[in-house]
Amino acid sequence: MPLEPGLYVAATPIGNLKDVTFRVIETLREADRILCEDTRQTGKLCAAYGVTTPRTAYHEHNAARVQDEIIAALKDGAAICLVSDAGTPLISDPGFRLVEAARAAGVNVIPLPGPSAAIAALSAAGAPTQQFFFAGFPPVKSEARLAFFKSIATVDATLIFYEGPSRIGDSLRAMMEAFGDRRAVVAREITKIHETFDADFLSGLAEKYRDGAKGEIVVIIDPPPQAEPALDADIDSFLLEAMKTMSLKDAAAATADAFALPKKAAYDRALAIKARR
Ligand code: SAM
Image (tube, rainbow, N blue to C red; front, side, top):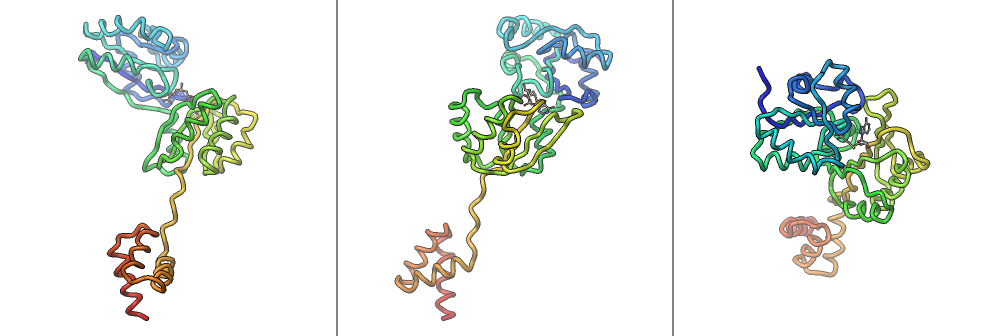
């Protein structure tokens, strides 16, 4: 069956060439053309799977220039496959403007899911996963980088960053300054021969990677520590103290404020304490 016309956004391996889906290979084979960040890089994947579809460049330097022509071809019914050098296009990679323009032009946009370094790192890091915040690459300049980290220091989620090997030491130090000494993981060379997951506090990782590191890196940082929930015994002793100098109602109100409790709960507790005495 011929490929439906449209823009296919295809995820490709982040190291291990086997991490590509059947659907991506099939689409690469059957598309009218492949838009690549780097035609030689994508050439390796194509050679490994016998894909001979024409490849043309689509990257940050020519994106604006070639976009109109691509959209015109899509509107004419072409099936075009967008890939980046590795992982999922648009995720810290080119493609957003093209997808935006394709949707605005009423063109079918089809995701072909697969690898992304952020999700691969998160899936094996051992950090909480209920909520996570993908922060991409931090700014390169040190002042902007620290300000950026500080601006997200209270986000109540696991944080995910991409970082280059020469900047990792500086970034980890700035992370420690902004986030405090949280638990973190440096995931390097995922799916490649030298894959490593290094889990430690930020202080330990900053020391270890002080002089940089080799390879491609994702940093995962635990969410901010939660305030310990108040223990019943703490609440009771606060109430008892307050009841020495205040009316029961005022003592309950002061306790509710101090422990962020509903007023009724603090009042009922005060009544129970009074009844026991
Ligand atoms: N679009 C890609 C994705 O979905 O993961 C990311 C592209 S971004 C230009 C490249 C960055 O992703 C690298 O600098 C590194 O931070 C991270 N990365 C890519 N491959 C990786 C790997 N195998 N191991 C660790 N990090 C990787």
